[in-house]
Picture (spheres, rainbow, N blue to C red):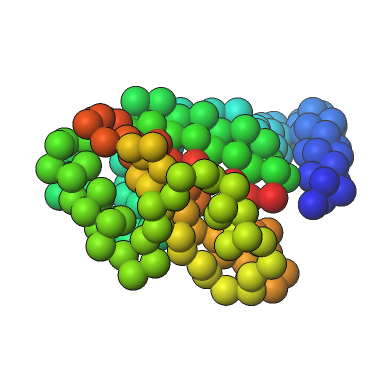
Length: 184
């Protein structure tokens, strides 16, 4: 995936270099307005995706959060606030988001995790390492509690795509929820 990003950067650089030449050539041919339009389009083709990558953390909205929570089977009843969102990487995508939720939503999430068929209360997280071999070809969901923390973890691997791991963590007697999303 890293080679693809390098190729895209090179194409973007070429387009940025071609934009002033396109304007100059069209202006010399008597098509000044067309030169401006063509140069502007070439710049926008490169700059808009670049800005969206640079400000990806700030562009994470409530609708995105609801979709991420829905992948784990949760739907929030009350309004919530995104406290912080940090997205790092392109090829190795790591996202960590913290939410401020109502106590009713927190209680419902904890109850849903506890009521799951595969819920386990563990004393040591290393016990789970046997379950999480990461060699699955389908979507797997784990539900467990450790030291007052309730976790729902999803791992999905599809042929030809990077595996996606989504981990929801909520502590007992807390109003915040943490969501981590990793694509390697």
